[in-house]
Length: 336
Image 1: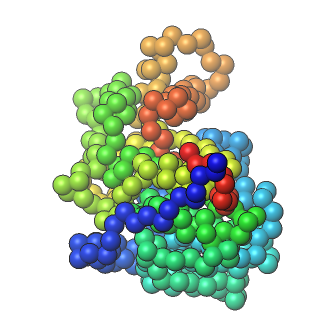
Image 2 (image 1 turned 45 degrees about the vertical axis):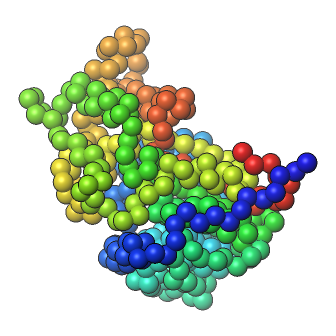
Image 3 (image 1 turned 30 degrees about the vertical axis):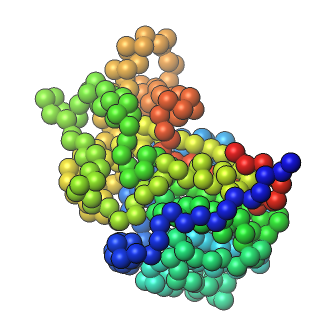
């Protein structure tokens, strides 16, 4: 006996409190295309992420999309800087993209960037994805780049994505999947702190860690609102084709040396990277590993990557990022 398809569930309703937060969320994204949470990390970190997410250190996740065929009707959930969409439009000559976002300014920005190079191949739709109805059986390609972690009605959006995919369509998601509201586990924070304490930035002084504080929230209202639940919810509504995770520890470097500055006003991503490399050297000495026949700096880096890989793959710590490829879940498919 086959199980019925998952139901369309709403986690929140459009009450006054929600509408107030929604207006604040829209105003936040009216003013910026990205934040440090979505920016490209330094090259050596990007190569590590690439290897973990695609199997090759010189290949980013978006480049895998071309492996799954040609696409004609695409949907992008969230209007970001437009770099990924520019790549897709240049590689898939028949592709037309429709952007969905709550911010009209964000939609205008991305369409303005793309229209000159790809005239007539982009459309926009200003919608609240928490309550949007996507056209059934329409898109053979859906892409979400660091946008799903702003969604409260995950079940409803996952239901809509499954409905709007064509039978042979694909949904590619790259997103933050760490603890909701960035409230990291005590085990994760202790391990990260131990790495930093092994060798502080300067003798007698260590850069402060500003852990996200719910009582003094400096992010957008819906930042990482249900990020911890994304993989479970979407795995229920859609058919998983490929799941890759990374960054259980590395993602925490974002919060070092920022004190109480809002993320859009602070320094670049992974600002404390050098400190963590020094800490990894001390950790290597404690582990008494054999001599590594490579440059000292490379050995430190590889050890830190190894630790991140171990705590991510074993599930000891919740991953920071995930790249997942989904297909339509047909009636009769078993749910998790």
